[in-house]
Image (spheres, rainbow, N blue to C red):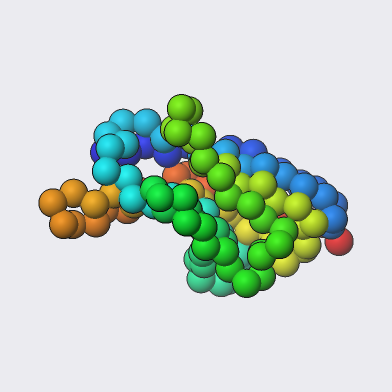
Length: 119
C-alpha cells in the first residue's frame, strides 16, 4: 500500500501562486509515475500534470507554461507549483501515484486539497 498526503491548497486571487505538496509513504518501491489531477464542481476529474520515474513530464494544455511538476526523491514528495492562477483553476486537486508490480498497475490517490482562485 501507498499512503499519499496532499497539502498546500488555499484561496488566492487571480494571478497568484500556490505550491501543492504530496508526501508518499508505505510501499513506494516500483512507483512508475506521479501526478496531480483536479476536479471542478460538476466536472470530471482531469489530469493537470504528471511526471514519470524517468523524469518525463506531461501537462494539460490549459496549465502549460503556468504549472510545474517536480519531485524530491529524498523526501518522497511530489510538488505542483502553480503560477498565474485563473478562476478556472478552482478545483479539488488530488495526487496520484502509479505502481507496476509483476506487470499489473496499481493507482493510489491522496485525499485531495481544495484550490480556490477568486476573480
